[in-house]
Length: 489
Image (cartoon, rainbow, N blue to C red; front, side):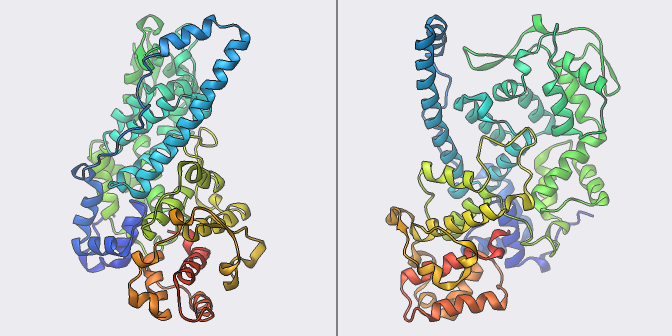
């Protein structure tokens, strides 16, 4: 298992599969560049992203607040009405910053130079599933997002230790309130159940003892930083997963990572995220063995995963339901268009069921078929109109796929900013000939041919328009995005 894909199987389809899953897809030229590189160099181009400059600036407010101590003191001295007013003003600032932060991250995914790094940040965000609804402070959410970016493909134990000391996580799972007199078990439980081992691979006693070991790891509200408070730490002897001693937080995390199940758990989850299907028991063991051989270092393991024959199994290609973020970022990349405004783009993924920085619970998003419901599917069709034509055209029932629907009058929203630049993505010959245009559209959006009935529907629509203009072409793009196949990657 995990043999590298041979060069004779490397082609436009497999290169597109790599770009779709290890990134957010891309236009035909970018896929063709990966084809020319061959499988090993193509994977390296994505995985070795440190070689690619990324000068994206952080949001202006993304730093510790120098006025925070004064603000906290003023809040404590304020009377009830003054406190309510101050809190209202603070919540408004937080809402505006979160809107900016969501757009900042979506921009990196949809237009940034390091798609694999951002895909890993998205994986870790879903894995550690921290929500601003409880953390409240955008600066801490940005800081955690940057932690994921910095350690996206680093060492598993190093990432776990930094996550355990991350201010947003300390607040999210109540570790900041843990004291030796009253150890809080939330982080100790979730780190074993959701982050590293899974249910059935630890005992309640392991959780109780681990919570004792983690006491003292806390958060300073004034400096907005992690702080180790020895006076709050339980220095007594504990036993966690078979290891006994005066364990501290790092000792516990190291003992967890040393469990054979820890390698199975995280590699199986990474496989499912990239491949779109659960790994068989045999493949799970092979993935875990490779991860251990790599010293629990993520980058070499991921390089092997993305090179493996198993990853390019034809049954996996274009069989994964796009997450809302993948759907939006991929559309922007494939159509070489602009990301909508901060207010719009964050609202689009939220309407589709994925509100960044606000996962539904500590388990994160379920993914897979759960992304598709009647409401979210109709929302995808509506949003396709917005992204392609710059219009909002409410969908009614099953009429969306009928060709005339693409020509119905609709409310127009800043068309100059959102309409697809047809001449940018299709050549003059492609824009002039219906057959050539459909073939180019298939190559760009699906990387393969559509079913004959779907091709016929697109052709029927184009034929009904006479000589093609740019609006006709935007209409057929929108129709193609309303097929079941476009919801897959």
